[in-house]
Image (cartoon, rainbow, N blue to C red; front, top):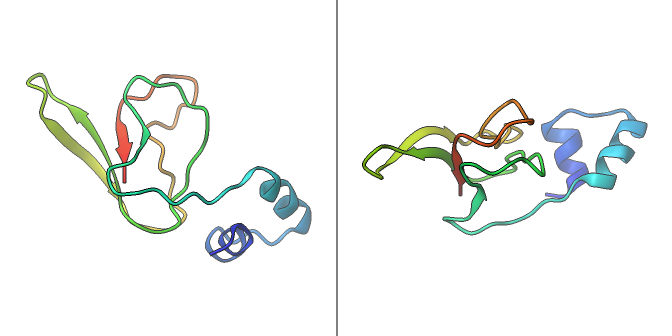
Length: 95
């Protein structure tokens, strides 16, 4: 799927001027299983949306065990650990 197809068909963007602006900064990236998009404690430098596949958000408990907090499987959903982009991430997000 191309960036334009994703913007039009998944996100529903139809305005040509908005599509042009989005295409200037959008990039589809394939990542392997286990790839970490974001790690706990990092500050945001990008916004990621799911095109296809499965991603999970998790944190470590006091004993160092991974606790899955969320799973994302729906195309177009954000792969962001937190909605506040001005704070460090509270979760790790991985493929």
